[in-house]
Image 1 (spheres, rainbow, N blue to C red):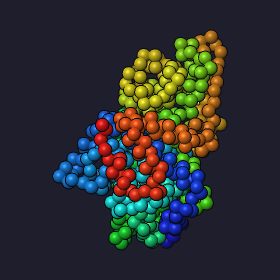
Image 2 (cartoon, rainbow, N blue to C red):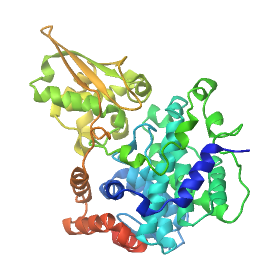
Image 3 (tube, rainbow, N blue to C red):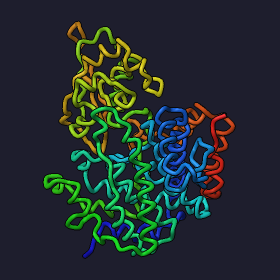
Image 4 (spheres, one colour):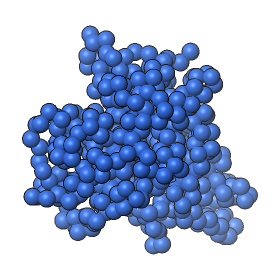
Length: 464
């Protein structure tokens, strides 16, 4: 039995060294980590953060805990800290996305290696190397399925994140290639996460990356102790690709992507940083709306808006259209194409303030959402790009158009490292002082010369 994907990833992760990465790639990796840390700090006083932190801490209330979480002085047991850290990094839906894999990778990998690294006394260099190993492995597995997990109702961030975290933690634990193969086999029984939250704005999506991170940690630990695991986690008769995908989607699986460019092509350079705290699928349409507004379009003049979207994204952000036009919560709004367009046209922006109830229940926004119609885009290049085109019919009969073929933040149109730092500071100073934010930034960007425990100690503080 040979699982080519699993074996290739195990060999790659085992052999990866920080110096193997080009200097610019190392710098980018640390900036991706900084972006996630900023998202976690920005979430600190959100309702979901307060309630979920209380619920997770209640799992073991008597334990003093040893591991810290960004923005909280209270220490938690290792697995609980990993879980909560993932919730915080992902909860605002402002974290990075690997475009081809349609997956949030940092939030499934970084929480696991941060906590495990601190637990094991790892250097920042070891932590950073394990983080990159997880990103690269997760990107390959996610790319193989060609977007099929979404089509089956699975959330790739939860499913793929488990495998990525297992390999990243295995790297920190210095597992052998055979043990790294076993860690992936263990992850197969733990990988989970579905899209039912889209139906009612439930908070379960916020749980997925942290759950994947702690499950991946456990998978690696079991492998480290020699627990037998399936040898064909991806390509086996009941492996990931066959068990999670139906026959039609299995036909689209491209196994070559599971090992393509390992060690020479760095997929982390294809990870997009979000300019908006919304589902990545709506970003291009939001930018198109903002552009049309800047060109003089007034919402009151709009008769109809046709939003041409990649067909693969429409079930997530366009359907059912009646619900998408009436978001009942901030999470509903994050996955509403009509709202992204309406906010862009009405306000010229789409930030955290536009996700408050007063913004998405505003009468003008509701009226404009009713005029937004979603149509499949025959020219879409999804999943390579998450593009969109708006065709606006005015009340006087004229039509205005604007197309964003490549979404902003994509590797072909990236946010630069300076942009990431600016976004981080905006997020980190929502609840924390500028001095604390600057100290955290220096620690993350200098992680390869520091210690995992020192970063944890700096982050594990309550807002002043």
